View 1 (cartoon, rainbow, N blue to C red):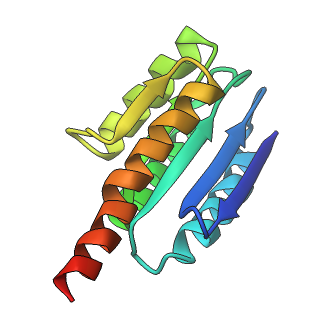
View 2 (cartoon, one colour; view 1 turned 180 degrees about the vertical axis):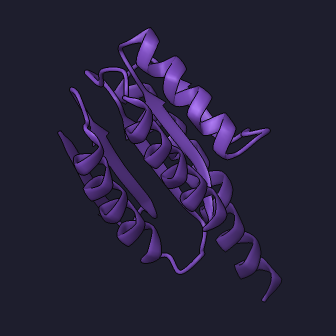
Length: 139
């Protein structure tokens, strides 16, 4: 099961992966994620990755997931707040992400959706609001 939502006002793509995500479903997820990412045309944005309930990915699904991570990183993702309730799934997605984007320093592991939202709020302030305020003062 997957969901992809895009809040352009908050510059945040929210993804939800749950259960066993087979390769065909992961391909559909990848297409939806790429479409959401493309709305920013390479501009800065954030990601909330809700992976609660995700089971370990089979190799083909993991490879597709890695491509998705790289796609976002190459197109302006500044931070990914990652929520997982499974150590195995969290470790697997972290490994796949690090293979796709070595030296990944933008993933923040969160213990709850509430913490993820707090981290995203801080990132919005740091990356978007402060820059807008600085630009206003420069005028």
